[in-house]
Image (tube, rainbow, N blue to C red; front, side):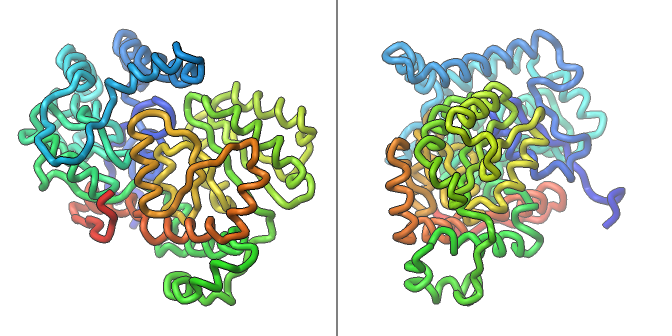
Length: 441
């Protein structure tokens, strides 16, 4: 199909951390005018930009401040309380509005997003947003086209659904069945929710999963150096990938990608990892990708740590950094092709386990990340990090046992990986392509 005839949509995100823009990135090619950040687009008023910026600044400051004894933990607990996710059981009516939701509705009623919707209404294509606030203000200010909202976590707070959900026309695109059921408890009609999976980068999947399968097949050998997993589960591997004898590792050493969050709060863990694994890096037995994202301060921090450990000249170290998020996402997705282990907090990257990459989880930040952690453990695709100070001991024990190879395959089998394709079918082609074989959690 020619580019001129391809169907397009408006794609909205918010510039807060990486999660919402990462979820929007796979739709860049099908977006009409690129990814629009609702909190910092060209033409946004200064007052509206300040409204968004103040909330983002508070979150990032408290996230970094969290480790300060008493004051930091107390401040974070207060913030986390307002974003809390109520226990799922017993199932009950959870449609009562929350303080967080009331705050955003008040801002929208005062005009938040009105200018942007007025501009988009000049060409009312389907509107896809990866954050709930743009979905709310699109509906409130009379957007003329259909409105779709991509959910970016394995469970969500009350604020993701409008005050009276049964009257809303917003279509939700959920990463799993738990989110669909949660939205129904918040008052959203079942017919307005599709379980699609999280939108994954197409360049890591391929039209027929050929890229994903090739990368996973190479990864298994690195993650199972003694062949224990391959011997025990040879029939499963042959059923879903290829005969065990055809598995061949890439020529590069075992590769770990360590990704800090948007606030940069996990950078110190990266320093510990480098120090403890330095001898393996020098011996050409290990590669490490340090993900600085778009944060120059994190990039400089990693550079300094490399110098301190005399690793700044090593070919087995790569700092992933870019000046803008679109470029960063491209570099990150490329690095995942040769990544064997992803070490990160359980953010939206939790869903990248669907690429057949085992995830070592750093400490979760906030209620939604705790639920992401539970989901990842439930499907068997991730594991909590042990003390980073002893990573040179426990990491290789896990590898020798074949445990991480098993986590990689479990992620491939049980985590949805075709979310981008399902979402495009629904939004652009009015073709419902909902996932059936996904876990409740």
